[in-house]
Image (cartoon, rainbow, N blue to C red; front, side, top):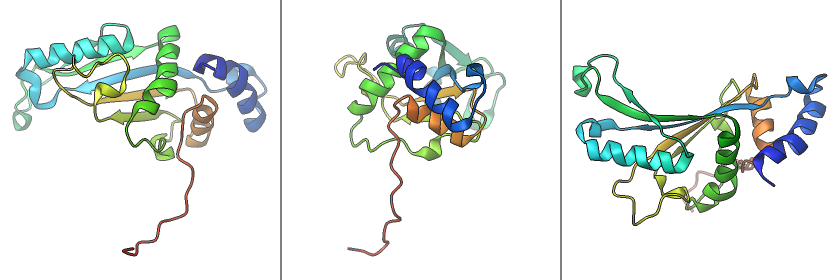
Length: 188
């Protein structure tokens, strides 16, 4: 079941019943997905930035925006107008397609993946997930990747608190970690 179908058929009825919403329009929904890559020390390397733009374009299906510095910061050796990041914001069908790919393909491809920590859902009901390498996404081939870089995926919702956001993401099929008993600190 794709994520959009899960939202319509599973999440809306579950959330309406659990939180006693009187109107279907009051049920929290995903509004946008933002994919962000900070270029860090590589601000002067145009080939690196082009590679990041190419990777984000393949992953999202749309051309990202290069974020530029608004002011000079000598401590970071950044001048005004230097590229500092690459950002793509997804809405509508591209957003739902990306979420479907994230849940059903990308998470299972991450090595040693044990689920998303519930602590990643913030107090406004949004989810932020960081990836150490872009190779978890199916569009990125190992032999084509010249540079390895991390990326951050921010999923913005209309939920107003952590509990509602967590319930929404769980109903959408996001694999959260199960609550486990505190581990013993003894050296066994």
